[in-house]
Image (cartoon, rainbow, N blue to C red; front, side, top):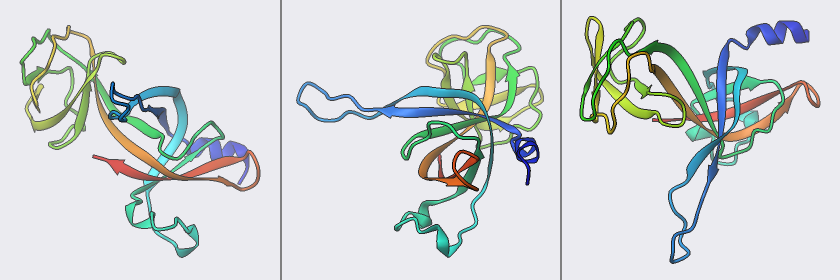
Length: 180
């Protein structure tokens, strides 16, 4: 397969986040926070089908998806984020609101995770119910958001293993575990 054909298969935009672990006052590690290290990278996330030669040293049972991407600085324990569906708020919402009026509910279903708000200040919530032009989320919003702010369906995956496929520098295949 030529490079042009491979690039045509990369139909999703992904973001790569790297964990940063800080220590508390007693020297104990805190819950990692994730910093964006690459954004809007073309990739393709697909369901994982196990094959014995993957040799993941016991992590095979955790694998849920596989990512194909052109070479980039991707490491085990990084997080891959995809935004499958994007819409916007159709009206202002207040702190404590759980019903969000949106421009479109197309493709959004119960149980999906959504990010409400701009990158850096977005709140991640779970869709409880989809209405005609609104979604019910849980938990309630922690802060207000303005009409027009993005609402995106997101999926997050933890990187388990990375392989350089088809020769040095052609493309990477990463084995992922969906982070629910």
